[in-house]
Amino acid sequence: MRPSPGRALVFLLGAAVFLNYVDRGAISVAAPLMKDALSLTAFEYGIAVSAFFWVYGPLQLVVGWLCDRFSVYRLLAWGVGLWAVATLLSGFVGGFVSLVVLRTLLGIGGSLAFPASSKIIAEQVPPESRGMANASVSIGIALGPALGTLAGGLILGAYGWRAVFILFGLVTLLWLLPWRLSTRAVNAPVTAASRPKVPLKPLLRTWALWSMTIAHFASNYGFYFLLSWLPLYLVQSRGLSITQMTMLGTLAFAAQAIAAFAFGAISDRWTRSGRAEATIRRWMMIVAQFVQAVAVMGILWADTNVTLAFWLCLAGMATGALSLNIFAIAQMFAGRTAAGTWVGFQNALGNFSGIFGPLITGWIVDRAGYDNAFVVCAAIVAAGGIWWVIGVPKIEQVDLGQEQQAN
Image 1: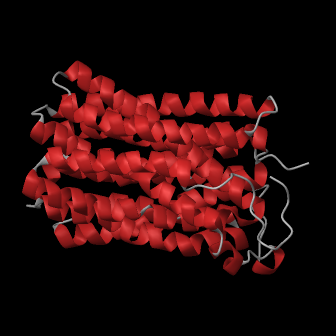
Image 2: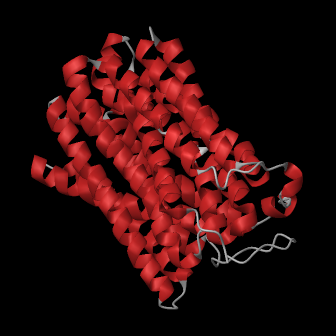
Image 3: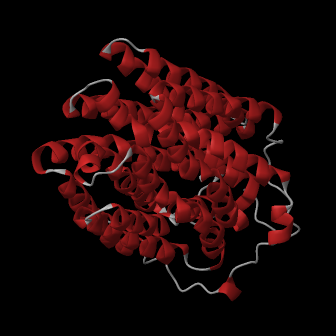
């Protein structure tokens, strides 16, 4: 029987992802005051946001492989420590260049989060519990921006934008203590020789991997669009106060967290009943992509705060389904042995939406306003729904020419 990491370990994986999204999203929360204080143009702000992804994405090509070869528990701890320090130091930046440097360091540390969590889940969690295990990560993706927006907005209003980064970084450093205590039993020294090798050439020739990177790009684009630009849009274009922006943003991400929990429970119950896990996960992705595209346009067209809140919640619910299943399906394709490498590659290329999205949006906003940026976002997200119908092959563990333990 497979060893179980225990509830504490799975909870801490969700907490790590939660803190990752709190810290990477701090810049958007601080933006309404920080942008003017540092005299940043919209394009420069877009560069600072995307700097995180310059290394966050490409490095996962390497760190995913490392997670399959060495102690994933220690690697994750080093990553969390690095991004925590980078977040804390962002509270002391003096201009554009130092901000970009620290956002880059944040990306280096953050690159461990998803390959490491997927490796641990694929290695330790059986299929009938995969939904809730990934839901813990997806809830972290949602609650990070939700509570980060709420707490950051309150800190921003009371103490200014620098305090947002400093306090967030200090809190993240505290995560290292329970992680150290919880992983003692499973954190025995791991060497390259003690791990089975993942054949990279057969992996890179697998269409399922390339199709998933395209799907990942489309599912990420809408989320990163709202994560990076929603606070600025609500304050600058809608004329909302920082308090109103904070409440609406928090509501949307709270809906995302609740949806991730619900969809995780539903998918596990479906699988335990003996029905095909692949069927429910594919249809969740198809429906969620189209719902998110409609919700993005609804946000643009909303004429009251009530309708705006509705569309934000709907977008959040769709994102909850997307974030849950995009990694669960990757684990199904990869199996236990190759999960770190697979997710590292998929997330690396899929997060090109985080590199190019903020730059594209900033360029559009500077020249044509927010309306056109929303239209482009909705089109890309809708194309992702079509891709799940025509581009992603049958969801089953791929044959990499090596003996892998069954999922």
